[in-house]
Image (tube, rainbow, N blue to C red; front, side, top):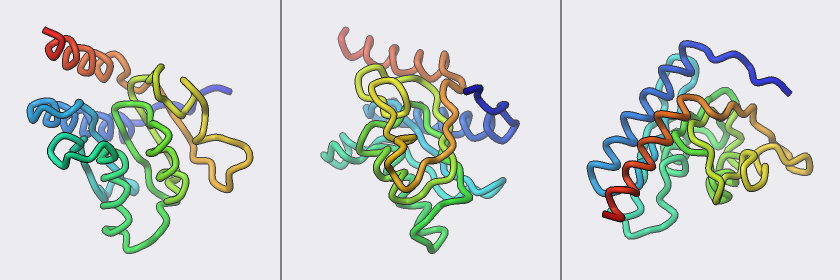
Length: 156
C-alpha cells in the first residue's frame, strides 16, 4: 500500500518533534520528541522524560497524547496528527489507539520495539476498533542519526 504524500504540515510537524528530541538529548534523555496537532493548531508537545521522572513509561508520545487530550478537552483525538521522531513502542501504540489519534507520522524505524511495522503492527491491527493512518520514515535519516549519535556518545 503506497504512503500518502508528505505535506508541508507533515514536514513542519516533524521538524518541531526533532527540535524537542534535540532538547531531550541535551537533558540526558533518549532523544525522542512528539507533537500533536489539529490542522495548523498545536495541541501539545513533549519529549522523553524517563530519566527526569525516573519512570520508564514517560515516553514522548505518551506525554504528548495525554497533554493533547487535556488541551482538546476530550477523550479522543480523531482529527489530530501525532508527529514523533521514533516509531511508537507497544505502550505508546496502545495509548494512540485508546485515544483514537487519527494519524501518526513518525521518523526513524525501531527494529527492536517498533509497533508500526518493524516488530509488529499494533497501530493497524485488524482486530482493534481504531486504526490510525500511519506514515513512517519521515525525516528518518535525521531522526535516526540523532539517536545513533546519542547512544554512541553514551558508549564512549
